[in-house]
Amino acid sequence: MSVAERSAPKGNKIYFLSDFHLGAPTFQDSLQRERLICRFLDQAAADAAEIFLVGDLFDFWYEYKKVVPKGHVRLLGKLASLSDAGITLHLFVGNHDMWLKDYFQKEL
Image (cartoon, rainbow, N blue to C red; front, side, top):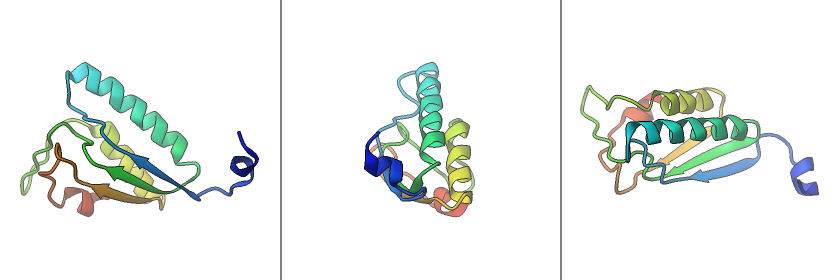
């Protein structure tokens, strides 16, 4: 750990994350990856001011007017917790999740 990291106050880091492709290639692979991502986000929460999610969180997310895809509850809950804790989240749509509508804006 560098001197800058040790002396940096909490809540001043900005994280950029992308290409999780949750849902692929298999349910078990996706679930294992989702758990790792959530553990990382738990650690990042200690010093994050903002988190940028820069596309392809899911391997095809189809959101309808009143329905969202099943699964990924760990990540969705984690993102809600981070937002509730005052960490600003920015979501960019990738080519695998371009069918996002307003679910994330309303829920987070």
